Length: 198
Image (tube, rainbow, N blue to C red; front, side):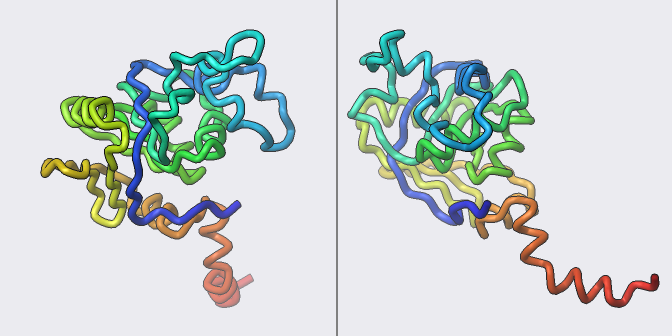
């Protein structure tokens, strides 16, 4: 399915200042039996967001009305554990378009790029600066410029570059997954195939 195009995002952020968050914490394994992509957003961080009686846990950051936005700011080593893409579906369907951390698990990072969530890896120091800015002023805006591959905080002059595979960058900017990319080249593929000997 086509995803939302990503060029420049300016948004407030939700600070999840916890390290080593694995995919089972992002979405518990019991919610992976679904045959359709439905309600994954409701089960994002399910065991951290809800009590056993399905009431909200007031001390969890996603339940704190002071914080909102399309950017999830996460602690180091985010997305470790199993390779389930359901974790990224839950993040995307909840409304996040970018996750910022100082380190991502490789498989999780690739799943993000395939599903339309931009994983932005920055230094530990800059990550802490973002956490501090949001905690001091929850409405602090973060700017993620995929074109220039830079992330910055409004009101602070410091900014950092981040790396991304050029092919994945093009797909993110066009809202494509791998299949969409090939479908977009259908006419070129047909022309190439017509010239091939059989």
